[in-house]
View 1 (cartoon, rainbow, N blue to C red):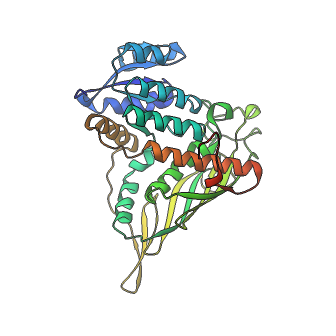
View 2 (view 1 turned 45 degrees about the vertical axis):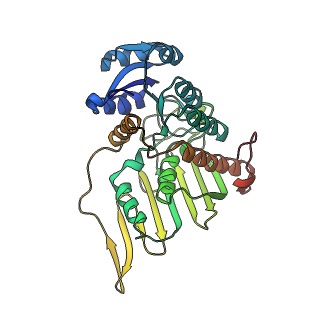
View 3 (view 1 turned 90 degrees about the horizontal axis):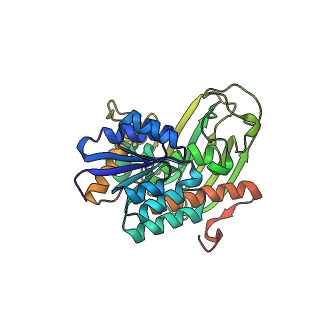
Length: 356
């Protein structure tokens, strides 16, 4: 591995141009963006010109064959995560794939197995793990300040936040709606703070009440006539260690807050809300609240990209692992299946094509 990581981009859309490329550029000499590929070749050309990227391609396979790359960011719709990630791993590249890991368990498992066989890093774009609030709370958790975490509330709620761009409302390309798009962020953050316990049973419910009719959009106008995802999802997850999570996620719901992304932990030694960070404890016969007066200001995405680059250069374990991605995908798929059948899903018995 060279001292400068040669990076390729698969997908030249908003997440690539707005997040990945600018933050690779902030890495200075540690990273060099060598190429970009997009099936819409004109988008790859535009991206290459905008950011002075020397090579552009209409298909990522051509890029992987012709460029000597060390790492790849996969910035495609969810449907293409598996194919692109596996191709990059087999080409000898480390991979940072945008969330969610994939469309289903089988794909996430194939991706993890390929990374293990190739001896390469496969990590996911769960940038809320890199938030200063998350890092601070994780230190408290690891120090035993919260004790045994047994109850968690997860909220990823938008009042009218259906994206009016991209393919976010297309189930075929995305695999689902708010649960797999924004709910997965807060669910991963909660699981990370809990040290990713082994899930046991899930019970889910999904709703399509507001997204399939014309309405006020706070994130642009959406194609309500071709709205094929849920606009709200709810779920309960229980774990083998006795802990449980209650999850709420929406693109559109009749609630007060315009946007809420939060995790609330309850343990036998303390509790916490994450955004903003507040810690609740009993000390010396007194109930106390702890609130930080200063936290680092570096951006979540900037830290995510910087740490991915460092992990690749130093051959260290990334903050988000491929195996955690498989666990997360099992939970998400279990919740969707439970919502379809109306029955709780025991994940030990949740086997599809031989994969648990």
